[in-house]
Image 1 (tube, rainbow, N blue to C red):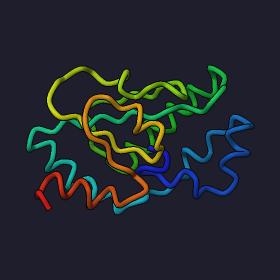
Image 2: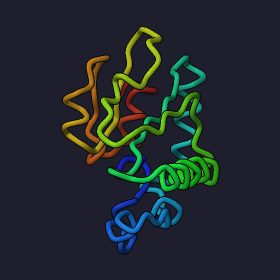
Image 3: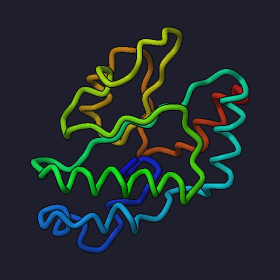
Length: 144
C-alpha cells in the first residue's frame, strides 16, 4: 500500500510519526492515483478472474498496540477509497511477501515500490510501483 497506491511518504513528518508510533500518516495518506479509475480497472480484472491480494508491511520494530492501530488505519484507508480486494495480509516489516500469499496457483504478479521486496518474490512476475501502476493494471486488462 505505502508508496504503491497510498502516498504515505508524501505525508509531512511520516518518519517522525512512525518513530513516535503515531498512525496519522496511514490515515492521512492521499491516493497516488484516481481511485475511481483504479477501482474500475481492478473490478474489471476481478471479473476476468484475477484475485486481488493486498499485502502490506507494518512499521518496523513497533509495539503490539501500534501494529493494531496501523492495521485499523490501513483497513479504513482501503474502505474509504473503495479499493477492491479479495484478501489482505498486514504483516510484520521485512516479511517475505511470497510467504504471505495463499498458494492459489496460476500467474501471481507482485506490484511493489521496494526493489528488495520484488527480488524476494518467487511466485511470478513483478512490477515496479515507482512506475505507473494504473497503466500497468490496464495493460493486464487490455493487453496494451
